[in-house]
Each structure stands twice: as C-alpha cells, then as structure tokens.
Image (cartoon, rainbow, N blue to C red; front, side, top):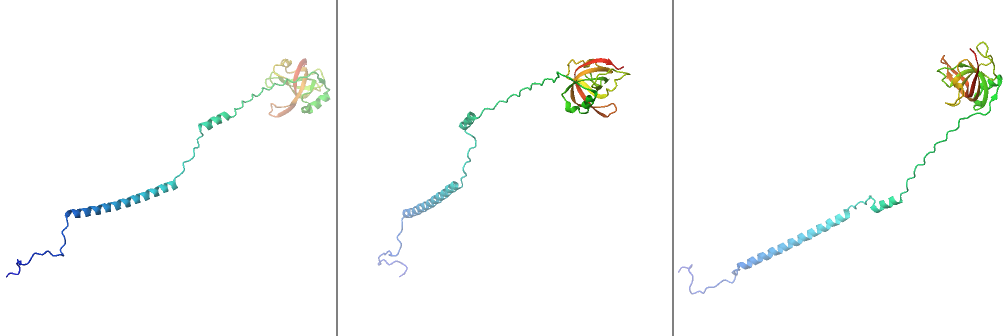
Amino acid sequence: MDNDQPNPSMPSHTPTWAPTPHSPNRHRGLLLGCAFAATALVAGGLGFTLGTVGATANTSAADGATPAPASTTPSEETQAADQTTAEPTAEATPTPTPTPSPTPTCTKFTTLSDREFKKLARDSQSLVGKCYRVHGYVTQSDSATGATSFRANACGEKKQPQYGYIADCDTNSFFTALAAGNKTGIEDIVTDDAFTADVMVGPPYTYTTTMGGQMTAPSFAVIKITKYATTD
C-alpha cells in the first residue's frame, strides 16, 4: 500500500491552528481608517503650527510698529485763526520836507578903522555872521573868480586911489554875492574898481595861486556894493 495515498477510512479533519481566512473588505476598511487618522494628525499639527506662527507675527508687528509722524501742516481752522488775529502792517509815516532856512541878512553895518579891519582879517572865523561896511579896490575879476566873485585889497577906511592903487589898503580878501541871483551890484564890478561894500563876514577862504601855492584870505558875502572910483 502506498502510504502517500489518503486513507478512505480516516475522516477529513481541518487543523485547529490554521488561520481563519479574512475578507478583502475588512483589509480595505483598516487601511482607510489608518489613513484618516494620519491625515487628522497631520492637519492638526499643521493648524497648530500656523496658529503659533501667526500669533508670533502679530505680536512682533505690534511690538515693532513705528508710530506715524504727527502732521506738521496747520489745519484750515488754524490758518484762518492766524489770518484773523494778524496785526495790520503799519503804514510808513512820510518824512516831512524841511523848510529851507531864510538867507541871512543884515540891517545894520558897523564901520571899522584900518586897524580894526586888520584885526578882523587875522581872526575872521570868530566873527562869521557879523555885518560891516568895508572899502577896497579889485585886483582880480576874471573867469577864474566867476561872474559873482572877485579878489580885492580891502581896508576899513575909505580912501581915494593914487598912482594906480589905494595906499594903506592892502589886506588880500575874497568877495562873493550873498546868494545867487541877488541884485547886489557885484555883477558890475571889474578889476581896478574902487568900491564901498556892505558885507557879512564868512569863513576863511583858501584857494590855489597861479604859482601852485595855497593862500587863505578873509571872505565876505556881499549884500550891496557900489563903485566910487577906479585905480587905472
């Protein structure tokens, strides 16, 4: 008898240790459940991480935020108030035009001796504005002196000319019209005329001679002058 052949007299028997076969659907359900669990865990972790990062970012932004600068432009209300309260600009006060001083004049003329006249000529600055009657003869009246001025030898006493001059009348002096346009008679006086003049003492007059030197002489403002002789 072949021992490898089954024994018909022995009943068939399924071993108790053999694994019970599983349904394919059961395996599929287990796999799906595991997948859902894993997905839930990942989603939960990701949500927690994103929430933490967002909160940190908000906190950092709040801590590091730079305050907006205050506006320096005045509001329309402030500008309107400034314009309303601004003080008006004061108008410039016009400067009054000064009234010209009247031309000084004399009503009385003091006569002098020759000696007194020489003292006057030595210190005429101290007698500026004083009025006297003097005499003399013209030594220069030309384009250099002008139409209303002349140079003369003067003295205090009236004398007649002799030999082409007047003796003891030799103080070099300068005469000019008191004011331009005044009819004093000075426009009719020429060189060599002997004259009598009512004058006001002026400051000493310095001029340049034909030799280039400097000469200072007493000066007189002529108020009235008349010719009484000639020396030529």
